[in-house]
Length: 489
Image (cartoon, rainbow, N blue to C red; front, side, top):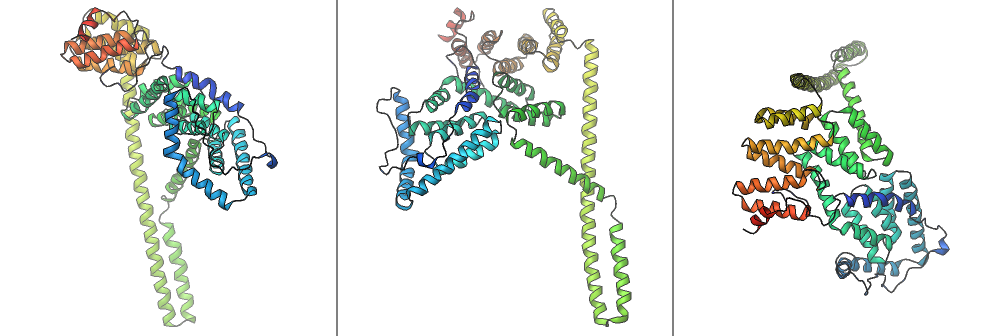
């Protein structure tokens, strides 16, 4: 693997197989979940022998058997047995059935909402059902499916795993197996890469990974949320609204819509505050006039002591009015500062737009194919600096995956030819972090990066890279005698 890569080596042919497996099953399994009967006479009585944990001695998978036993022993058994003992001692049979009946009602309600794409509300309701009836396998499985859609993978695994501990359930076993495979670990690492790229301000790369995830599995909710927030950060309103619309189709009541409503309220309050700052003086004149009239009128009827009290009240009101005026002035200054910052940002965006237009005019075309071909010609002629500019334009302004990926590959090669080895390594690793082993230049990139490390004298990094080449693309023509020679050193 590459020096900074964080994902796991696979023994499968398709890097995104884990997503496809999930995508084809979660919605279907949700629709196939059984409804609960609300006939209280059919609800089984609680047993008092404390032997509900179903650990099969004939479990063929020894690792899974050991994990189940450890999980039950360390996390659930003592606490659950204690709860059962308290329930047996304190609760009647009717109370137990009533609690189950209420949990079934909530389960059915959550199932109905989930099938109407109200996933967020469904999660809240199924969790409340589980609090009442924590051993019910159907409720545990429904929670697991919903948590998968929300990309809360650890909670999903815990729910399915608990269901498997309580009974030999096919649906629980199916998802425990899926979430335990190496290919799912790789998918999870790619998902984490998208978050890391955002933290490193590599927004374009993160968007590519998240778009790939949506293309493979359009039912996973979190990628839409992240893309909405990312485009909001970038100021791309059109893209942000597009992903919000798509999110509403799969999770109607997602938390982000509450955030949107809250933001609209804040904007309205800010506008109202701005209007109030334009009329700060009128608020002082009317109270003074009214109070002055009161002083004159009351002087005839009240004693000097009453007049003094009135003057004291007048002073207090003046102080309060002055305080309100100061607060409004502070808000006005804050708004003025914010407007200046917005103006500055607007000017910077306009300047950037002019620079991009100038660059586009200099190249006399915005066609990524033309730019890419021009870069290749310049590279062949030895004009590496000019070639790098062309490839960089394709990478930042290109519209198709093919030319963007090839431009990143050429940026690495051209930087290496021009002696910029650190830049070359950066682009080689960028390519490997974004794309999969099925891409055209993936094995070539691993090979070129390994040779570059070797020529720089970094033998350990070279070997690590060539081991990655062998593992990820075992049939590559680049697994040649040169690679064997270096690995044998």
